[in-house]
View 1 (tube, one colour):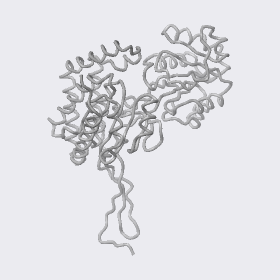
View 2 (spheres, helix red, strand yellow):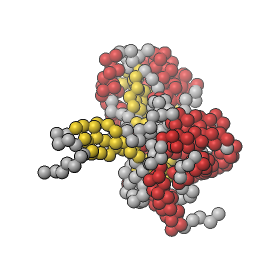
View 3 (cartoon, rainbow, N blue to C red):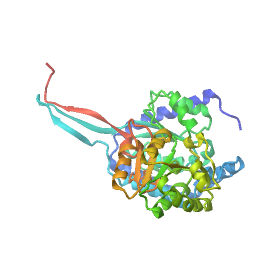
View 4 (tube, one colour):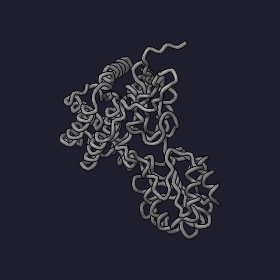
Length: 424
């Protein structure tokens, strides 16, 4: 197949962005009822055309196996009828949420009689650059439409056939429900030049959300002329405190590592208080090893788990996205927090403890998008937090942090209501 030229790629991406900008002005004025009807139609059509989506996904899976993708990556890429049904249910959940667009708040009466407040409005055009997971195509499109935005989707080459099938379904359903077809557009080419071209189109695109590995996040951050909300890597920790219930701690640790190791909210490092390490680590290690987890540990960990390999400095900063776990025995609570501060990515951090004071101290002192007490890091997810889905999990602090739902895809503008006032 002939590869498109750089000029052709730039032209394609520019046309997509121009069409999205024009569509965004129409979408912003649509009623909540029209947008919700479009989301319901999208959900129905996803299930109706699941055969075409699964066929596209099988092409991607076959290519992935041929190209040597590991098990975790193949799991992120895979679709089946259950996952398609979950995508459709997610769209219906989003349709049922309150509509933030047009909401007016903070209205105050000034001494001169002016009424000053703030109205929540769509961002406009959102560009989402992501890897592997084709369900992101549906989740992102639905959230953006619910918030009155147009969306430009740039998925990875490993999921191109899945993404094309899903995006076509969403665009068809939107158009049939009275929403401009350009509300949901997928950049059709897989070349890296398409990302570069998109990042320069600040005239048309209002926000970029990258989702993927560190190289993608860094490239986008360094090359974008458009504001970026980073969905960065997840170096997530579970800290087992000296006051932890050992059975609860084991359940949480195994779930956080094993349930889906290839996702960003999976635990990558287990921290264990020295006072309970001897009783706790051998037991949980057996369960982790039985689940196929490779263990890497500090010197104190290896004394308790002889089969663990020695952890090196790089392990504490690594997002494995695989059945690999680093374990460190820490002297006390402060040492656990210090380790997280030095090596965490600001994604998800959990403590297991029966000590209320320790739990509240952890919540206060640990700086992360989500801090969990006696619960798995795997809960840091838009659906689990009641958002229906998420455009990404922001690991930065402006303008959104944590799972980005509908409200995070809007901003606020000032509105001023007067009756003839002029400034003296």
